[in-house]
Length: 126
Image (tube, rainbow, N blue to C red):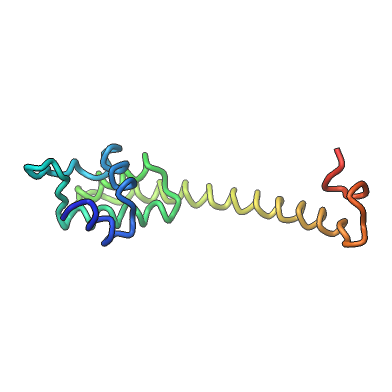
């Protein structure tokens, strides 16, 4: 299938597909005589996997390793577990940071009233 069809079937843009190919996450596509990229069904499966990883906010380096591990079906999952554990810690840290941000924003909002003037607005004070 050509890149347009792969894009349509995966939901990714052609630009994103070319980027993943350049990063080595997708294998280099075969070329037709007209020099169009020609993708296989396996490439669609790999692209879906990459997109799923990105939806989970997994970085490109980790995705590259996971793609590599997928090609070793008899390997043990220890490395995958470690990677996921590190990602879980990162998400937990982000949640804490977002909770602090939310608290600060709510405190600022509590000081803001429609009848208040801009010069009295705590959010706008230097």
